[in-house]
Length: 61
View 1 (cartoon, rainbow, N blue to C red):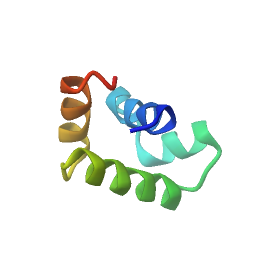
View 2: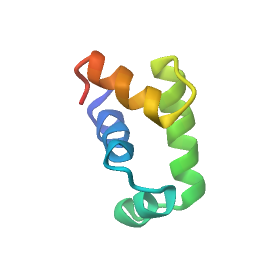
View 3: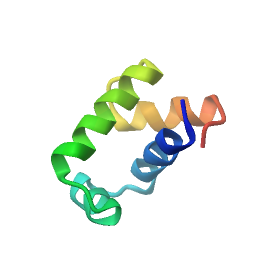
View 4: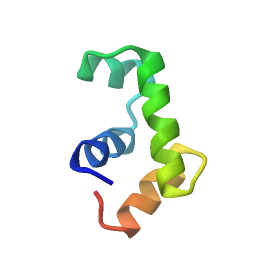
């Protein structure tokens, strides 16, 4: 996982909504959802909580 994706997975750990993440990154909510789907796939999970936990286990965040 690249540095950019690691940064993307770090935002959900803050509890930010898709809308808040989109506003921070100046992208659409649909793009946030797409990024999250790709992150979930790379981490082998299916939700935010699991993604954050797995990223922590792998020391990505």
